[in-house]
Image (cartoon, rainbow, N blue to C red; front, side):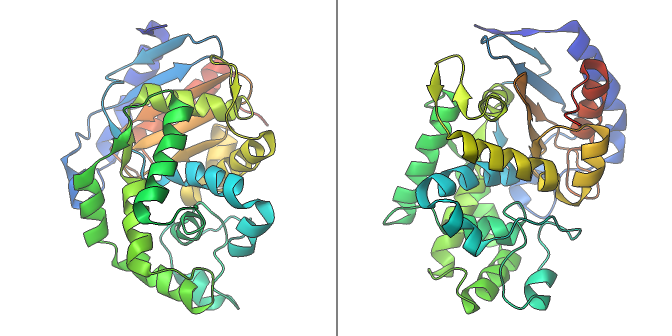
Length: 309
């Protein structure tokens, strides 16, 4: 079923665009600087296959930190909950997503949760495979199955740009390797991680993936259980508590749905048992969330009574 434009959603996007002037595109990853700060688009995908949209939903988005939810799901399916949470904790952090301070000040370098960079690196480390190529292929196959799109791949330019500017993530890896949280070659892990972050899809695909989590891991259109129910529950819980960086508490109050953002300006939302949301707005606030996307979700939550609380 094709995605159709929707007047009501268009009106909400137009209203949310008023805050774009207060944001700016990510500048610490050179390849992301090319994005247009005036862009804002959204897709909503329903369990019956219906989709509504506003803006250019076919524009590709690199997942960046949104990929952390997907690698967490795959790692849990590969290794089980006990193994994964021996490497990474459950707790939110009030620190920036790329902070090293908790690794320095804790008794061991175990990251607080899977949604910060240190935790995401520890989780990516657990993806099974004999090589970077095999592990990346398994992740791509998993994401393609969730989105129902075999064309999904990664942006080589963005991956290279991120790898070349990944010194802080290298430091996080060495801290964790010191305490045995990871035990592989740091450069190989960063090669995989930067390609993971550079996996790209459009808003429609993002909304379809969001729907899978909203429906407890089941694809209602194809009638397939793609993620175990308990894995989907864990991922959604982390999306609520940690998914919007250190603005997750305010987001829970103002919007109140499981969601995950990335510094490319993407946001994936999952409204339990109702629909999935894909948003792209590359102008970011000071925390690293899409400023237009955050406003749009706040407006949508008010309009459609989305909060789970």
